[in-house]
Image 1: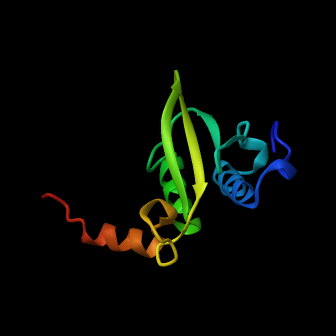
Image 2: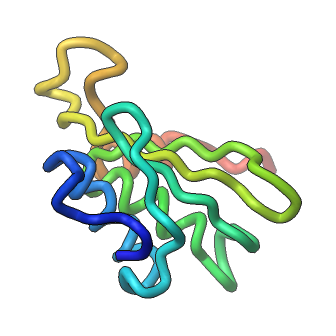
Amino acid sequence: MKAIDTYTLTPDQKFCADMLAEWAGGYHHLPKVKKCSQGIEINHYGDLSTFDFDKLTRLVLLAHRDFVRIEITSSGPRMVKIMAHRRKPKEEGDCMWAHHPSLDDLIAKAVAMKHPV
């Protein structure tokens, strides 16, 4: 991991870092990881897209697989800050900000969406 000692992360922060490392193609491709409250954040340089270079799609799918809330905000020219906070499965979370939908929930939402044609 770049520029952070994994021993200083909480188990939930380490879980998020591992998920983002999987998304990035390994820790050697992951930008500097910073603690952010109970989660972590990275500054990603470059594009996020849904198909040909599908980093955005893969990030969303991993987030739903692992119950990690992802927030993406601008952090500079061609850069976005990606924040990750671990959550519980929807059935276990006692309030909206404590849980995250699963892949099955995402699939059900996608099936319910109809193409406007």
